[in-house]
Amino acid sequence: MINHLITQKNWQSQLSETVNSIDELFALLGLDLADHAIYIPDQFRLRVPRAFVNKMKIGDINDPLLKQVLPDIKESLTVTGFVSDPLGEAGQNPIDGLLHKYESRVLLTLTGACAIHCRYCFRQHFDYQSNLPTSQNQALIVDYIRDHPDINETILSGGDPLSLSNRRLFAWLDALEALPQLTTIRLHTRLPIVIPDRLDAPLLERLNQSRCQIVMVVHCNHPNEIDDATTLALRRAQAAGITLLNQAVLLKGINDNINIQSNLSKQLFKSGVMPYYLHLLDKVAGAAHFDIDERRAVDLYWQLLAKLPGYLVPKLVKELPNRPFKVPIDLYKDQ
Ligand SMILES: *Cc1c(COP(=O)(O)O)cnc(C)c1O
Ligand code: SF4
Image 1 (cartoon, rainbow, N blue to C red):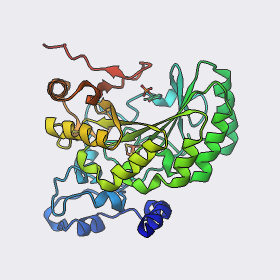
Image 2: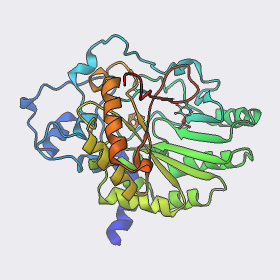
Image 3: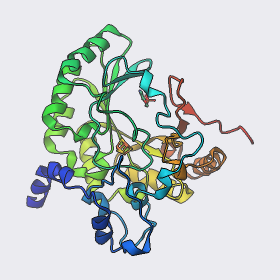
């Protein structure tokens, strides 16, 4: 109980005390720097929370969690078709911090900050500095939603919206809940997976009391990301009345495997989370080495359909720049 109370207070220090140096990461994992060719990028630095490092296997350079965060020299390669703004988002924000691409919902990039830097991230080149909502345009954003009565859902995203303090987050919830047209507030966040203590009691209470339906879409790619502490935190969120969904990205050498995908769905379900999307990689510059041929993805998906109950199979999708929804992958193309 005492331990529990202490860690509950601690998410902000966990967020500020992430591992940011490859030397330290290798020391923690018992790996020898001299054995590996390591790349240190300037733009998108190494960042990983200690709670996530603790889920990695000691001494394994191929650990699937390590591979998601360890910079690779391949990031510096220029590969045809891999660009800095693969979704063409630069032209779709009528107000700084607000993306309106889909009919009934808007997405707010509340912060550029994340607890973890995922090397495949499609927003790694996104110019957050010039595209964050300031306190003045909180009012502009609210006005924009009010002027578009078809919008009934607001997605809090980023970066990671749960890297905001509860105080700042609650101010957004207050402002949004005051709009009668909104039925649903959604959070897109990786924090419950990488720092489970982020789901602290004040946050869960506040979300539980919202007049809107609360959906939390977490981001978990591999069953090893779900340890007991993670399951416990997610189940607490479920008990607070939050609908929990997962989106994953299909990543070469990390989760492009039938058993891993199947275990991921089962571990999520055990934690109260339903699989939602399995995304093909967005073709962002620096991430080509994670890409999987669409044909292989479809093969894997057929295996998944055969192995799991329907409710544990995520939708296989990709994003295309000018489509107002995530596009389902054609499963019959070359059958
Ligand atoms: C992914 C996304 C959404 C949400 O899409 P859903 O299919 O409802 O999950 C909304 N807006 C933007 C800009 C997105 O990229
Ligand atoms: S948590 Fe999400 S937004 Fe942040 S680096 Fe990872 S994939 Fe990108």
